Image (tube, rainbow, N blue to C red; front, side, top):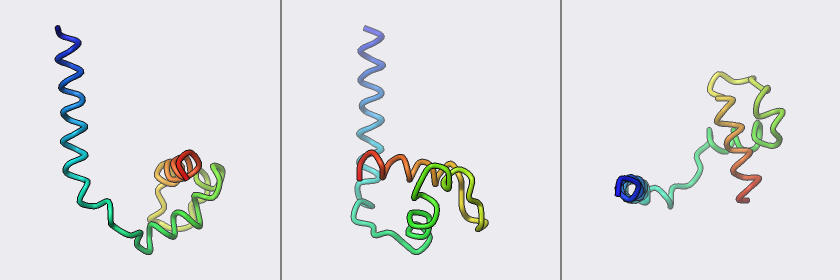
Length: 72
């Protein structure tokens, strides 16, 4: 019974987060996001070790590279 309650709680939280963020799905990429995608997220080495601008977050760049590599 405890496992079922944990599962229902987890799924409920995911659905709540999805409902909150679903209004931003039509959001187009802004200049900073495009810059990260084209300049840093082209391969994992540049994503993790290229730090040429102060707003480049290395882990975020790696996550963008990983996501675009897996999902297109």
